[in-house]
Length: 157
Image (spheres, helix red, strand yellow):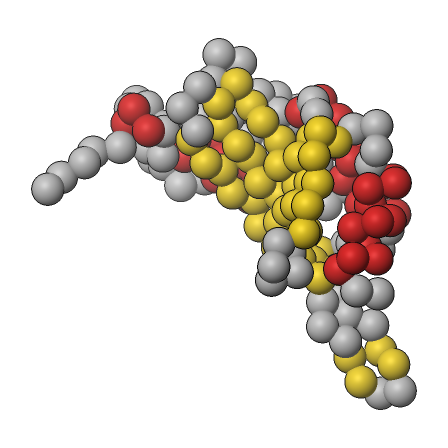
């Protein structure tokens, strides 16, 4: 399966939960959720399409909102003893700073737990239904704002 075929399949599977989709020149696919509440359902549909490996979860402070990026890999397929190249895709969820919460995907992908904890520590995005919401990177007594929020970044010359 090539990136264009996977994009067509996922466009169809996700048509009622995405606001946009695209394919970059390097073949990476990108999907933007229409509503962050649809994250667990979208991840389930992506997994049903054979995209099972979560690479990482990252976040970007966009000013009034935080983009939470779920990076996945669809493994290549064997054909006559050769393994085809895998396909990377990113699922974007937009989280407003006024309500910085998003659902967990740990029930589907247990390894997401550490990435979600990092998201909570570093960007202040809460994951209310996370099975272990303890701090991961910051000390327990840390009382500053989320270090990767634009308003908390220290700029030096």
